[in-house]
Amino acid sequence: MDRARKDGLTETGVNGVRLFRATAPLPCAPAVYEPSVIAIVSGTKEAVLDGERFVYDNSRYLCCPMSMPVQAGTPAASPEAPLYGVYVALDPRVMTEMIIDMEDAGDSVPMAKGAPPVQGVRFAHWDEAFSDALFRLLRLGDNRIDTAILGNARLRELYYALLKGEAGVFARQAFGAGNAIARSIQHVSSNLDKPVSIDDLAARSGMSRAAFHRKFKQTTSMSPIQFVKSMRLNNAAMMIAGGMSVSEAASGVGYVSPSQFSREFKRMYGASPRQWSDTQQASTEMT
Image (tube, rainbow, N blue to C red):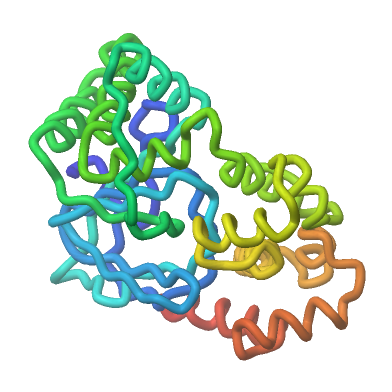
C-alpha cells in the first residue's frame, strides 16, 4: 500500500480499482455504497446499514452487489494505527456475463432451502484465491504498461475469485440475469431526481405491489419507500458535504418542497441541513 501516500482515494490505473488511506478518525456519515468490494489491509472500517452496525478489518472483506444507502466511517483510524484498504467497483454487466458463463460451464450453485434472506451487504473471509487475485491485481500498479495490458484480465480474475468464494452465492443472487430487485435498485439510483412510483418499480419487476414490497425488504432490509428516501437523503448529505448549497442538493435528489426536505433530513440525521453542513465544515477544518 506504499502508493497510498495521502488520506483519501488513490487511483491504481485499473478502472474502478482504488486504494484508500485514513490517518484521522472520521465518524460514520451518510454515504452510498455502489456495487463494490471493499477489502481492508490494516485497521478497521465501520458501516451502518438500516441501524445495524458492522465493523470489519483484514480478516474479512465487504461485498456490496447493489447500490445501498449506508453510514460509513473510520472512527478508530489514527497516525499510529492508519487504515489502508482497497475499493473495487463491480461492473454489473461483467459480473452477470461471468455468472452466465459459469453456469453454462456447469458451475451452478444450488440455493440452500431455508437460508436467511439476502440483505444488502455480505462479509466474507479472505480465502487463498481472493487474496492471490487481489495481490496480482495490485502489483500491476508498479508498471504502467502491465496495467494497461493486463488490468481488465486481472480484474476479471478477482471477480471470479469473489464468485467462487464465501460471498459467491450472495453475489450470484444479486447479479444473476433474473434478479429483478437489483435492476429496480439500479433504476432508482439512476433516477433520484425524478418521481419514483412503487407501482412502476413493481411493474418493471413483473411483480404485484405486495410481492415486490416483500421481496425488496428481504433483499435490502428496507421497504421500497424507506430505501428511496434513504438514497435521496444520503446523496443530498454527500452533496452538501462536498460544498453544494442545501437548495441545490434538495432539487438534485428530487425534492420539490424545501420544507419537506429539511423536515425529512432532520428526522433522519438529527439536525437541519444547514446545521449539518456547518458541523461537517467545522469537522473538516479541525482535521
